[in-house]
Image 1 (spheres, one colour):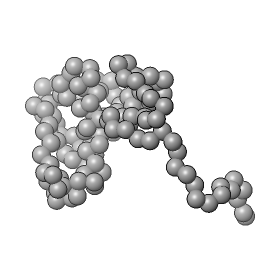
Image 2 (spheres, helix red, strand yellow):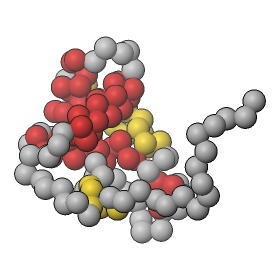
Image 3 (spheres, one colour):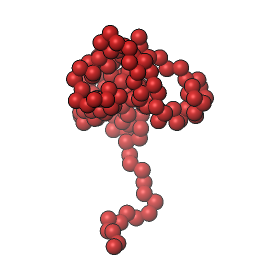
Image 4 (cartoon, helix red, strand yellow):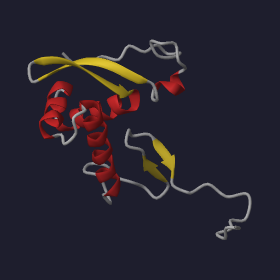
Length: 132
């Protein structure tokens, strides 16, 4: 049984604004190795995990089961967070993603939205000296 997201336009099921939704911990029931278990992750990690599973042609339950069998930590939620982090770190380190192109004017976040390639302009001169 795959977890489903049930958030309305104005916030999540706990009434939190949509912008805070990705930081809220969401507990979902999943079947791993034939056993039902609960996994608590921030919404951003659920989205990232679904993205990884979709790109690999796996169900969410199959992806979680794969993480479960190779994890080095006792906590499945922590193992999933580390897996998602490592996946997107590896992708970010690649010069070009398979099937994706980066242009000089934009970059893509791990979830596909564009961000400006030029760094923000500092309004005050930067000082690399620290006073003691």
